[in-house]
Length: 291
Ligand code: SAM
Image 1 (tube, rainbow, N blue to C red):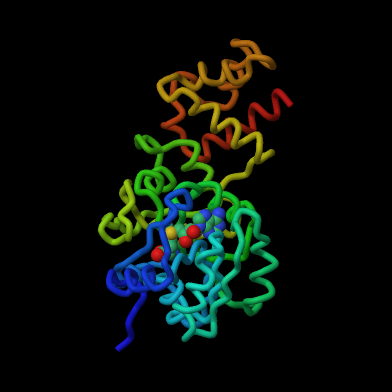
Image 2: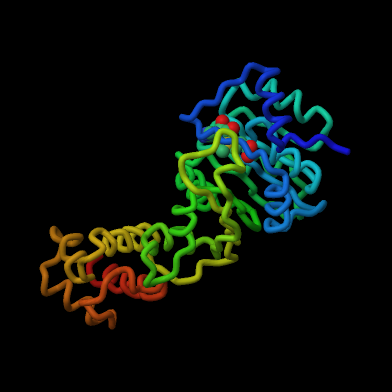
């Protein structure tokens, strides 16, 4: 007969008791539906062996479910005002470590080595602050953490872009950046009414399973990601035209056309039709010819 935090009534009580007012600038939209949190536990594959990392515990709605379903939880919260509230709402649990820090400044690797067992599967589970979703995910992915999966609530449109396949409207450089590190899938859509206060945008839960190794061989990762961005710089333009603009100081039009031919990629195609494998061939061919 537990009184979960993630209900409208309990959330309102907690906010009133502590005189808490939301800061929209910190993306504070708290979940008030425990069924959604249970779904997230399932989709994330959380069980009693798991270590969980949460970004932005808020008043502890999701943290509480992680404490119940996982072995241990680390939660990063930037807003100082929430610390005494979390002390209060999560007092019944002894397997949660709340850290008062901007996750973008945090050394997550050091923290999880210190807190989790060496062979424990680790999952990131979070209802992310929407204003910095991409920086947070890219930081955690590039840090190459020993994390099995990321299950995150984010803005629906961003989730779709991150999981998009070639030839879709939402396919772009963000799809490649995310899918280079993970297999991405949108696993759930969530109504605005599941949050307090309701956000202005629709939400989805995105599940990312970290890849053991990169799906394509690239000579130089920065060069590869720059090329991908260049190919999407103007979506309606052909590869040829986007790449001519990109290389304007280092290669003339004819050279760009020749290298595209060498790569075996039709210069009249658009970036949105290229698979990750084709982007890798393209970037490697230009790298070898021009660098
Ligand atoms: N997990 C809670 C829930 O689902 O009800 C709250 C989620 S709310 C969308 C996002 C949380 O992230 C807020 O508590 C906010 O203060 C926190 N936050 C915002 N920016 C942050 C940052 N850079 N580092 C850590 N936490 C941050």
